[in-house]
Length: 156
Image (cartoon, rainbow, N blue to C red; front, side, top):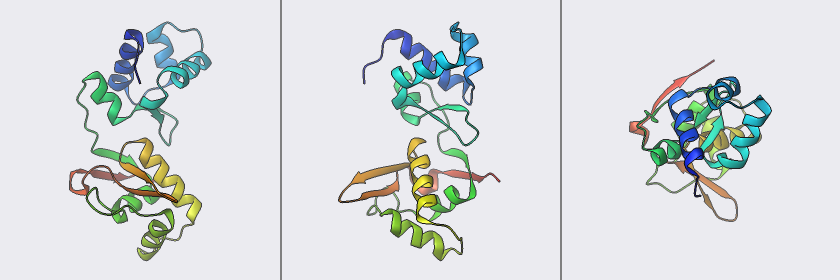
């Protein structure tokens, strides 16, 4: 995706300010409303940002790389289920797993969950650049970052 100079500057703002809120970006960019911020993010920067579990705006690891800003993308705070998924998910050099295979691996740790929760956890980790997807008959998932390089903090 090609970005205008303004979009690149605004993306750099997100990387530097993360985690941030609509209001902070609104003030920084001189935009009148939070809904205009949301609209801009969705229309111009959709591939480069996500909202975390607290609805704060964060840049994807690709965004930081794109604008040339170093971040510590390997230290992340995630809810317990996402942390367990990271613990059991295939590594970058291994064969990717289906949602059901990940569910069974999570259940083997003693955690009680369901397929929809695991699918959601995988998608949220994918949004953060921690998990990658391979398309087959069904989506297959594996870590995008070597497990040894990740520092996962469980948030309750």
